[in-house]
Image 1 (cartoon, rainbow, N blue to C red):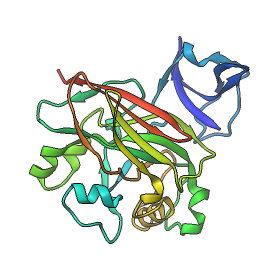
Image 2: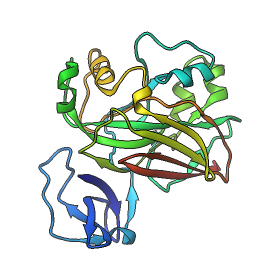
Image 3: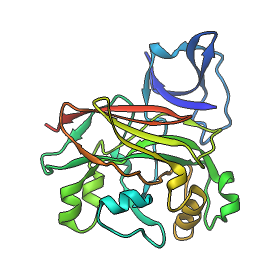
Image 4: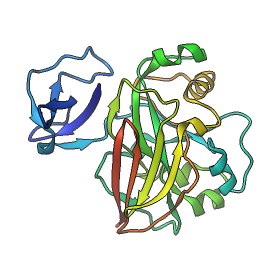
Length: 259
């Protein structure tokens, strides 16, 4: 099931994305599916008639995993971590598909990082690896935008990864998805820059959730970014970046100057 958040002529709502014959549609649901049982309203809207928003609004936190692909660790000139390398992005960095990424005046080197994102579905702590699927609501696509020069200058990653608009998510959450071995691609202005597979992760989804939940409580709507393949690189205002994951679709955003 694909669950999206959208805006039409009224306030943002959630809906289930599907097909009516050959026409892509969205069927609105009542409330937020993370906090209430899924109940359809009976409406059907053409998907082309609405604007998709970020499919989840993290009320608590966005958690990142650094250097979780050996190729990316190598291109950054570092060793592969011996345990997941964790950082946080503020929930104010989250935007949806089609929304602009603002290029901050404080940086001269802003990079794209296409990633698989996990959406947590229930309160959990100290989750065993075998129980991880029970606490995941679904999966979506992320771009862990990073100001690489600030990352190097600060010696830690909060500012570099925490600017407003530095965490595009979307276009929807897929609740029936196997993350074990799927392709992740990032294109910049149509040119492929990243092309990897989740099977190349140093730590898989179960290991990541088990590790993170061992020291912090996870809440419904928390998002975990699982790391990026090699091939990260700079974006400039005027560029368009797209992250595609097999089975999840494509997340596209443009880069603009921050005024």
